[in-house]
Structures are given as C-alpha cells and as structure tokens.
Image 1 (cartoon, rainbow, N blue to C red):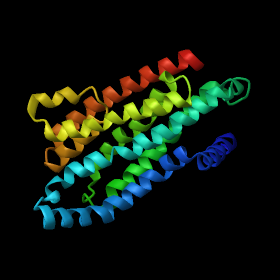
Image 2: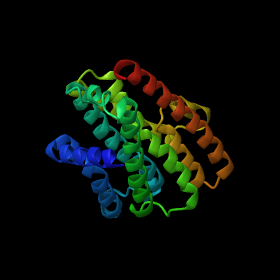
Image 3: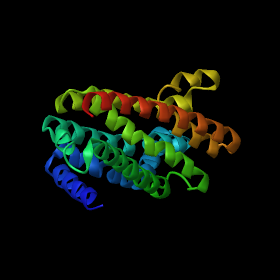
Length: 241
C-alpha cells in the first residue's frame, strides 16, 4: 500500500503543476455546482424570455452531464500515462517490485475509483434527479468509462500532444446520451457501439419505471464495456508491457 500512496501523491503533485490536468481534476466538481445552481437559473431565464421549458429536458441534462466527469478523469489519467511513457517511467517499474503489471492495475484502478465517487456525488447532489438505489448499477457503467478513455489515449496516442488531440476527438463520445434520449425505437441501436450510450439508456429506462428492461440494457452494456476494456488492455500491453 505504501507504493500506491507514493504514486498517488506524485500524481496529485503533477496534476496541480499542469493546467490541463488541473482543469480535468476540478472540472467534475465545478460541473456539480453548475448543475445544482446554474440549471434552475437557466431554466427560469429560458422560460421567462423565450418560453422554452428546460425542465422537460431535466432527465436528458442529467444523463448527458453525468458522462462528463468520467471522461475528464479518463483524460487526466491517460495524459499522465503518456507523460510517464515519454519519460520511460513504465520501463522503470519493470525492474521494481511494483512491476509493469502492478503499474497498469494502479492506473486502471485510480480512474475507476475516482469516477465512481464523482459520479455518485453528481447523481446525489446535482439537483437534477432524485437519487434512487437502482441508479447504483448505472454507477458501475460510469466507473468503466474513465479507464476506457484513459487507455484509449495511452494505447493510440504517440505522445502527449497527440493525446490532447485525441481527447478532443474522444469528446464525441458524449453523443451516446443524445442517441439514447432522442432517437426512438430500433434507430437507437445506432448508438450501441458508443460506450456512453449504455449508462444514459439505463438511467432513462429506470426513470421511465421500466426496471426489467433497464437491467437487460445494463447487462448488455456491461458486456460491451468489458470487451472494450479487454481490447484496450491488449493493445496497451502489447505496446508497453
């Protein structure tokens, strides 16, 4: 546990020195405050001046915004991994008791735990939803989004500059909740290949009081996330471990 604490302390020091990583670290908390206090203001303003009822899109707003914290945490960890690769830190771990596989376990566990905590805070305190215990399985899918995005950057970007560019392209993953909420019936399966589609769809089904269908979608989403994660681990391991 001592070596993990040392790595975590080093990560925090490094993140605070890099403005991009700092933004990724505090972004989820800023989003929580914006949702809780900004959404009512925006809703009142749009209703008063444009007769647009934003309250009708409260569920969509929640499913859309809850995706952002895991993606930000995934970007943070992915860019850290790229920096460590450029500095040959990963090679250093191969000759320590930590070993490269221990490094990979830590790097995947960290975003998973952070994503779980931040997503739980968002669902409970954003003010957009009344939290129900059923939403806990949504957290499991959200928790897997962060290591997936981190490995996407670490496996396919050659350096941190490419990682930043890829993270912007990866931002297109937020289309998942849009498809889950607005595209009806069988056309909605067009988003099935996008990981972010599944937690948004499961949440939407629970809110519509369709728990059995939500559980089916959860199981399918869990399988898809697991397959993506194994694929990313395979690519990253072949390159760096």
